[in-house]
Image 1 (cartoon, protein in one colour):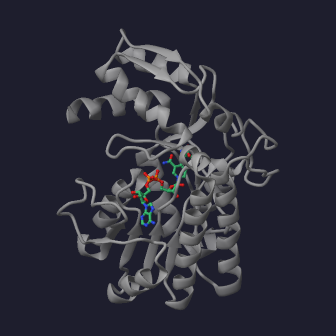
Image 2: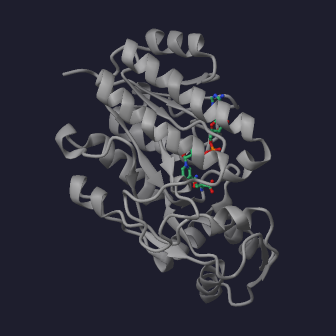
Amino acid sequence: MIKEKILVIGASGQIGVELTLALRKIYGNANVVASDLREENDLLKGSGPYVSLDVMNKEMLHVQVIRQNITQIYLLAAILSATGEKNPNLAWNLNMQSLLNVLDIAREEKLTKVYWPSSIAVFGPSSPKKLCPQQTIIEPATVYGISKYAGEFWCNYFHQRYGVDVRSLRYPGLISYKSAPGGGTTDYAVEIFYEAMEEKKYECFLGAGTYLPMMYMPDAIRATIELMEAPQDRISVRHSYNLSSMSFSPAEIATEIKKHIPEFEISYKPDYRQTIADSWPQSIDDSVARNDWGWKHEYDLPKMCGDMLKNLEIQK
Ligand code: NAD
Ligand code: SER
């Protein structure tokens, strides 16, 4: 049996921190190498190896893969939707070139598996708003969504043409308390908790009724690991799987938070991110993931809110 050695690229980000810690529990601390352009996140310090790495530098990435005997890569480095609209060229270059660098190296070094996340941002204004299916009209309206959709085709291409075992999920907006989100349109659903606890009020950059698909980080981490551990013959989608757990609006999450913090008040001042949010579906049909590899979510809105507030209180 191959001894797996994993490289997580973008390990200091919102998903990277928790995914690295979860992978270290499964594969052993020494067998999961965290890497990022920025410094090592405090929560990772002392828990396993860390290397400073720019994924755009293909030569250095290749050297690390060989030097560390890497067999799997989880590529999380990206520029998200809101930041991407401020700098479309940068978002396109990073999101595309990082994936092509990783896929090329995976092919050359015969890596056993690659993980790369896509997003609900692949869907655009012409996609169905409710229970958006796995296969439908997909015309993304943001540079982030365009880069994710193109990336999905590259994943499928490298699988079909070179046999690279690359797997992918279209994450909804992710909500977490361990590491901060990095420039997405769904970031309000994390900020709101901090402001509710500290200020008892929050000015939301999306309108009251803006429904979006969301997921609590423990579900997202479990989905990622379950997808990666599923037998090859259970993976029918080589572009990227729809993934879903809950959908809510800013008004609904505010009502839920008020059950725990009655004095909390929300106000609304939509900005440029409203247009991005309005281009995305309100809910996602993830029945293909559920049928193929048995995906089941655990957290709905009330359960997620209760857990977030409990953990943020402990962190205070
Ligand atoms: P994040 O911005 O929090 O983290 C990305 C990390 O990548 C950062 O730590 C950053 O320093 C690092 N990075 C950036 N450029 C790099 C480079 N050149 N070399 C090495 N590292 C670099 O993002 P995240 O929220 O953790 O997202 C991870 C992945 O999941 C991305 O592909 C994102 O598109 C996808 N995704 C996230 C969400 C979400 O809600 N967080 C939803 C859908 C998809
Ligand atoms: N949470 C992400 C964003 O808002 C969705 O991919 O950009």
